[in-house]
Image (tube, rainbow, N blue to C red; front, side):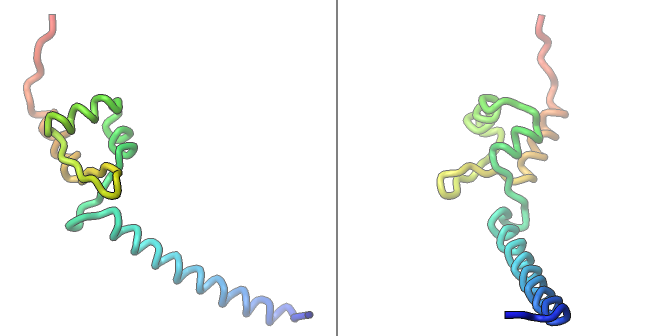
Length: 99
């Protein structure tokens, strides 16, 4: 089967337009899956990198209820606004003096 250059370009253009449509749909679905009430959800790795803390510290924030979390399909997520609130609280709370 032979196709000329013009027909090939036309087919490739149609394929690329379909890929663009699919890409937009995937982006929309990802945004829906990783946000709640318009607030972005972060997983453990995102929060660890953002706060530059250890996994144990993050676990401590959860267990002391300093950082609310959500379990979705067995995976932990945090609202970005809750992480920002934790940061604000840690900046305004007095530090303990260690001698």
